[in-house]
Length: 136
Length: 60
Image 1 (cartoon, rainbow over the protein chains, first blue to last red):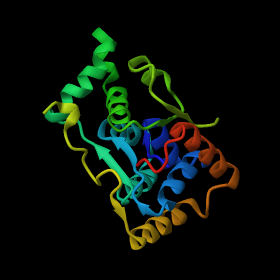
Image 2: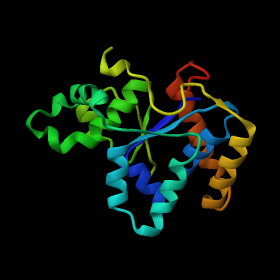
Image 3: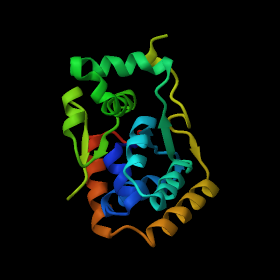
């Protein structure tokens, strides 16, 4: 079993309790015995999700991120160069793609699929990113 | 060291997941979810895990 990266759409689905598929992804990582199979997101994706969730859903997201299986990648001076490398394809539109670039970087860095309902912003930056599409 | 080679924040790949941690995590998830996810969704996730690993096993 491998981990997953959650983009903002997956975090929103989790917060809204709207996707049994996202629940199943997270639950099955949590059930794995012996070693941590991580559920990863990024601080930028988290900010985008929180901006679109009502206050009552924020605690649900925060609870997930406090779990042992969860990781949140920060965008720091140390990671900026790697994110910028991913972002280079966006050219003059780079500023609008920072969040997607952090998600792609997290996926590339760990060779993990991204759980998302909106793969286009990710595949624009890296056509080979593995997509775990949330069923509609 | 290249930025891409910086250590990953949080638990290391394959970090030990104790039974106590697992039980607490599952309890919190069950509380939020109101029960286990539907069996068909768990099965879809399992199939996709197989597709993504493509023969790799136990890769965290």
